[in-house]
Image (tube, rainbow, N blue to C red; front, side):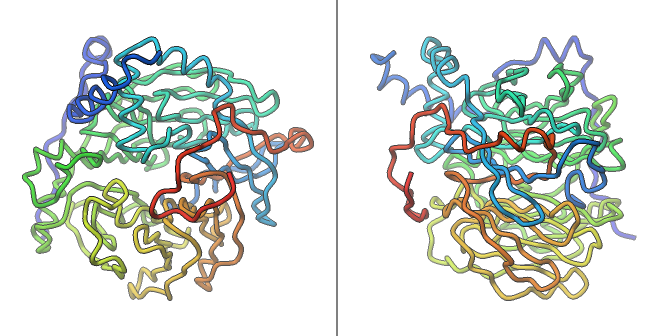
Length: 462
């Protein structure tokens, strides 16, 4: 029998103790130091299936696809059937207010500038993740540079509620199967908040490791699978260095009701046992088999993915994929992401994978582990999401400002649509049918980007 790869369960402190311990402290001292240095210079200046695939549209709603244009500060809405652009919304309508707030707080300003330089590659991050409410009236958005989560009214385009996360940066989110709760990772707070969708009220939180990252509701919403990734923005994220220098990285299962940590997997031990002692333990995007007995996930700097048995914690399969940038220095990887995006179709037969640094997508058969041809549809693919019906996977090309629809069966790009600047997360959602009639392309309240394209972007009109 395979040896268990589970670390002892850890209990979450009581809510009162959690509040006492919450705040901006964390292992991200390097970011703080770098950000403070930057601030000094300017001190003189003021899973398994698609999300929502099991949810039927409520009366009066229509299915849409939301694309977060991170550097632009907009969310583009696409029609899922014809896969065409419907319009966009401004996700930073309070830009002036937030910037005034940051400019008068040296601590916040230091981190704001640090995030811009170390994580945003010279750009502010305005939308990392988003989910709509089931009634199609709200879209909930995490805004990294503003360290918050907001709900925007899809009719008025105004902010309905706002929640400031612990620390100074918000990140990935996950929506509960019933659509009532959303969890959001607080990158520098080392916690994950659980919020009520209708009003933004916090109903709980749970601890994580350094830089909490992705979460997925599992077991019908009873538990949450969560991973943290450590210091992916620092020089200490080299897999050759001792793990403590890279921050605590965890893969854990959390009770979605009590927020108790039920299991922490020994990823390091599992990788070592497979002879992968030189591979980082930072778990990146994840997806699950339909029965949720197998985890499939990517790892920092690794071109490919692994499969882990949920019960034993053993890595049961390793799939290496083509590395087309063998001479690229490690420091030039995008936040350590050799590959960043993986999604299982509902039958569990195929995986859609983003080869981020190598500029391709591919579809892998989960029985044979054979891959399709490499699909060169754009630059720097950075997220993959199955369509609501499971026929396609959507992939964002962050360097090309486009999103493609790939047919799982034929493993071909079926259509590509242009979106905003630096698309990242792509999510299935809903909108009231009556709102579609007034939906237009609304510009961002943030200033137009003036920075030069990065080395891996395709220049485009801004």
